[in-house]
Amino acid sequence: MKEDLDRRWSDLGEFIREQRNIGQLSLRKLSEMAGVSNPYLSQIERGLRRPSAEILQQIARALEISSETLYVRAGILDEPDGHVNVVAEIRRDPCITEEQKKALVRIYESFLRESEAAARDLLSATSAAEA
Image (tube, rainbow, N blue to C red; front, side):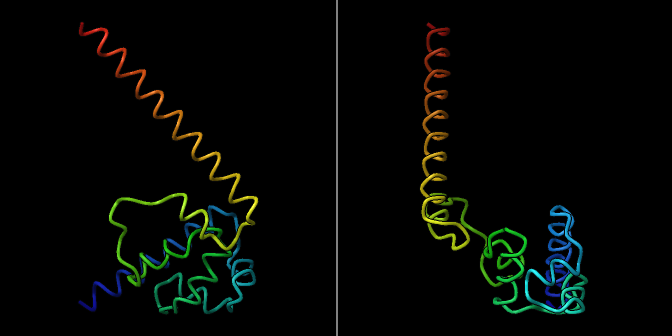
C-alpha cells in the first residue's frame, strides 16, 4: 500500500517534469509561474513531497493543463468513466474568456458534425458496395 502511494507520487512528479519539458520551462520558471518555491517544486518532481490540491491546481494552471489531470494522477480524483462531456469541460475552464469558450465549443461541435457526416458517408458507401 505505501509502495503504491510512493509510486503514485513519483509518477505524478515525473508527469509534471515531462509537462514542464514539453512546455520548454525551466524548473525556476515553472516555480515562479505556479507561485511555489523552486526547491519545493523540485521535491514534488522527484516524488519526495505530496502537494495539496491547491498547489496542484497552481502547477496545472502554470502548465496550461487541467487540474483534474493532476488530481487523477495524485489519486485525489478517480479516473473518469470514459465519457467526457467536452463542452461542459470547456465551459468550466477558468483560464479562458467566455468568448474563447464559445469559439472552442463552436469548433468542437463542427468537428463532431464533420465526423458524423463522414461516418454516414462511409456507412452509405459500404451498404452500396454490399448491394
